[in-house]
Image (tube, rainbow, N blue to C red; front, top):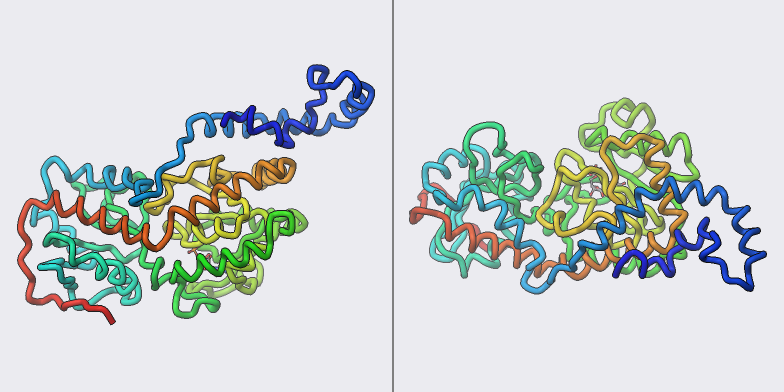
Length: 402
Ligand code: UDP
């Protein structure tokens, strides 16, 4: 569908467009009157032209990916394994990588891990998926980074085969689905055992989204989170300056010491993800790396404003700006943010459409079975480029279902 077709029911074309060629002859009087009154929207629409052009462009090149067999995410696997494909992954490379993550082996369809894991609940979140697929995998060694930050920089040394949940284009790390799809996500007071159980959150958020459909949502931006990145500051400041438009406040995290860590204001109480669904506009930001908030916000059927495009998880690249979410520059000023929010408010049907497409993508293409499917495809492809036959390291412990 082109933007022109799309626009037949789009308020952009209802407002400030009452120029002669759009006037019905019987209604010309009304039209000129409306034309007079719509000077503001004409100005606005000129201001909004860059967004309309971006939507047109996104729309013209967008092809919906095929959800079957986690096809939507296959390019990520191809891209991340490419640096290792030509020469294969030898034991020497794994031995270097071992210092940067947790060492696992899959031997004879069983899973083994070095005894210590830096973050036990993160390892458990990873192992939940690995245990379901090991039976069908060839023998392999793998190094899994359970830290937030990726480990193999493109600017230092040779590419290292390290699995990380999130990275920017500046890293060689091989992306895997985060532990937090099952357990080990950030522990806040609302989720004291750590954010996890994506299967359960999907259902809860779906229920919340149905009890607050688009026309019942507050026409306001909402954000709650800690100051894991200063990129969030401008939205918080905008909220302080324009509380009718934006309700964005910093909460505490484990590193919080004083109001300075919440941008010189007392920390706000935490708000459950389901309660975010009461608002039309939800912001997502990177934290230390990609934030686990991202996928949850879409399920509210709210419009997601996604800030920055550097930090990704394995599924991000198959979601498209202006199709599934509103892209926001990480350097956006308060004025830039205000303009973009007003664009969404002034074009309500368009905003609802983008919100629904974002929701449908996450709902239909990011199920638990897709996470498992991605892990399986990733490790099958990875196993094919290992250039040696691993031998069981006697120091490792066998990991079994709990
Ligand atoms: N979170 C939440 N309600 C809050 C604050 C945070 O549900 O009031 C969730 C948030 O969605 C995220 C996690 O807690 O998934 C950690 O959020 P934070 O902003 O502290 O860190 P991030 O991981 O986003 O950098």
